[in-house]
Figure 1 (cartoon, one colour):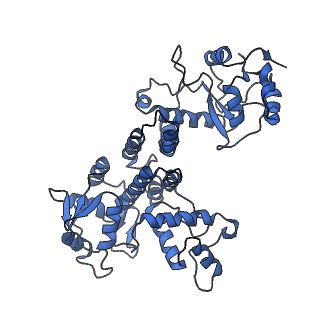
Figure 2: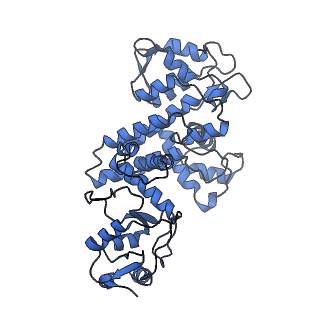
Figure 3: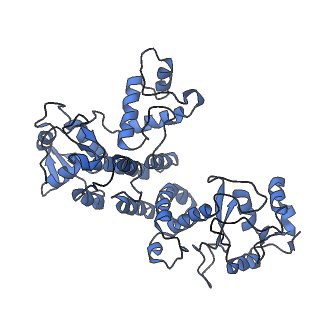
Length: 429
């Protein structure tokens, strides 16, 4: 292993949770019409809009620019010079958890994001000085983890010598590195030493032996920093395991409140599960899938169902479209015990519906005939929403919209819905 003594380049802006909260305020302000395409990184002199924007974060323009650049470098904000500021995938996850009040999980995501950023952060003697491509320079975090003594510690004096010992160019970066390492949750300071905390042991072991893939380009590492769960990320499996542990540690199965509390984590895992699983029915017997929590499995199934219908409500005369406006509905309910074909995560036991049609379907106001035509109950007149009623009633007798693969729901599941959920005699026009 190469020896790294001195010249540990740093951008001279350390991580800080309070600074991330300030940038969060700036992100929200940047979405306002008056800031669209505003160049936040531009000149500060005689720029009233710059002063106005920075005041939304209660800071000066120069400080504002430093904070935003820092959060871009750590992977919370996408790179760019103009408003609106946008979260990366990992930044969005942190923001969601913070917004719903899950402060414990939000703090862990903050720490993990810093850890990944520090893991791939490399420096060299070129004019560039540092790079996010770990194959193009020295890796300080890997070096430091392998330098620790038998007590998993390093003295502050030795640490300072390592960081600044031979540098003539930058000077005194040890305090910045120390702040980042402590805020990452990997280290704490004790008795004039930096001590590994034992947190994220699986990740720390992975970083000790981290060998960057030289075939990956700068743009690939940029994507990994923005979302360490993507397929090319060397850390994806470890991060998934950490996320699963976080959800399983909060008694999520028995409380609706706690389900909402950890939904962002479930969604982040499921996005990657959906793309990684083979294009087969996601049956509960699948050993790759059965090891996941029930909610992760269901969320993954739901993502794929909506994709199959191209995010369009399957009711023929309903015009609702869009990822945030549609839901995946079980035909045979998830809560029903297995009898016959396993149904909970079967890809032919799902249908994409808008929120209103989903409620009407679950309550039995309409169902499907064996030829996949919509049938409505005589009790549909109980529905007060005239637009919803019109969409469903006018669809009666029509075949539901096609999936992208032209497959239709399994008749076994349709028969269950008609026998157990559908309310009364059918009206078919």
